[in-house]
Length: 215
Picture 1 (tube, rainbow, N blue to C red):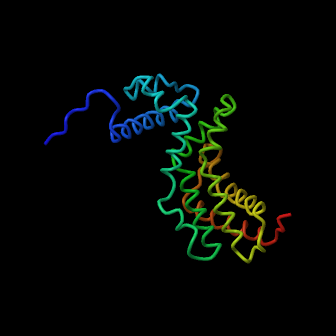
Picture 2 (spheres, rainbow, N blue to C red):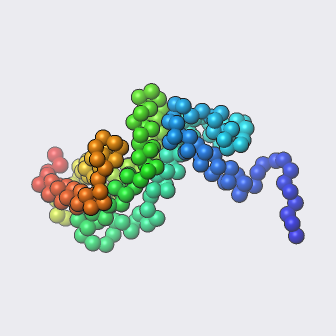
Picture 3 (cartoon, rainbow, N blue to C red):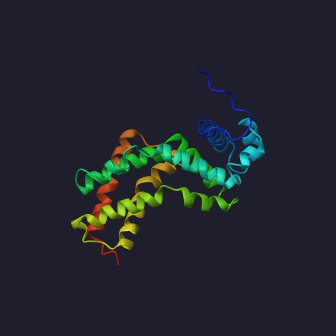
């Protein structure tokens, strides 16, 4: 028996989810292609084929929409089994696995396009800094890696503050230079070079940690 057509009223949960996905799909394409400043709510609503009133029922402003886009990109780049990355093997093996995963995500086309937008427009739009801080996966990574370092006896039981500092440095060591090269400020690294970069970064990082007091 066919379901009766809905006439007016609130959309079904399924229809609402599809609408939200359509808005984010359109907004992602516009933000990454035109940038934050040149993308307007009117453009998003028009391309998504909805009214501005319907848009504002979901997002209070453009910054909130951009935050949702960032969250969507980060969530799609996140590996399906995050917990599994942190178990099995020595500290060196786990960090090498993390470095490879982090590099793969950071150098993906969408991640690089998002980074370009943020670099180009954060100065003109201070609200972007708050959005990135709120939606970034970096904080979670710092906490997880910091906890991993505190559990390893070879590092001398660093404090929570020291382990967070070290975890932050590890993420920067892994990503900063390869990402800079991939963004056009040099020659993008080959797969073989990226593999070597990840291994050598882990070696250097652990050597430094084992000779560092954290004070």
